[in-house]
Length: 116
Length: 110
Image (cartoon, rainbow over all chains, first blue to last red; front, side, top):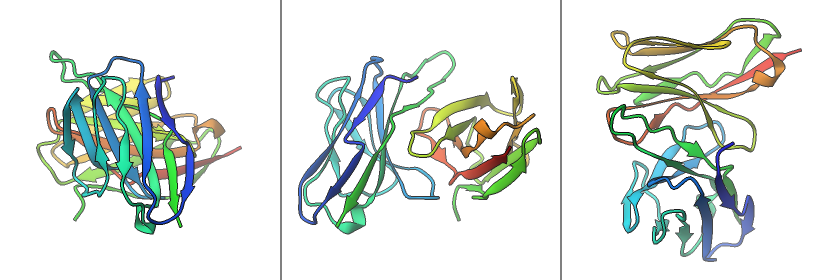
């Protein structure tokens, strides 16, 4: 089982609140990712990081922000939550191997966010 | 048009059946192809990984990639109720992040 953790697992919050979704991994992976997944829909990459102090926006535009101050920690923040932010948020990490270009992504269990 | 198309199902089969799951894609730059399994309320876990065209077998699972047709498949032999999950195909060109299909929900009936 992958050593990647997300908290909280479930969050129900009112509109306008600031929230931070936590993601930590103990595998020493350089690369970390945040995906958004709605029921029955594909995962959409919203943020990724290739190392400390490196963050990039993904394919899906998101009002959330991320930071990567420590290798093992990649929190996602929403300054003012809205009902349109209701979704499942999945964090993943991977290690790039130059020889094979193999980078299996290990996923956390996800945070299911509901904004009322 | 989505870059990766996958039939959402649900696909319901009896225990012991051979299951075939498929994805088509439009980006000819994709080189690395993966299948993930996602149980309800869990994150996806990697099942199979293949590079370029060809077949790869791992126990009851076989992954096939046909780059000329832009078509990938996952076969599950002797399916079990514990195989009931959503199966996501994923692919990427080189070092970029993965592009996922929407997933096919599989139900194996005992």
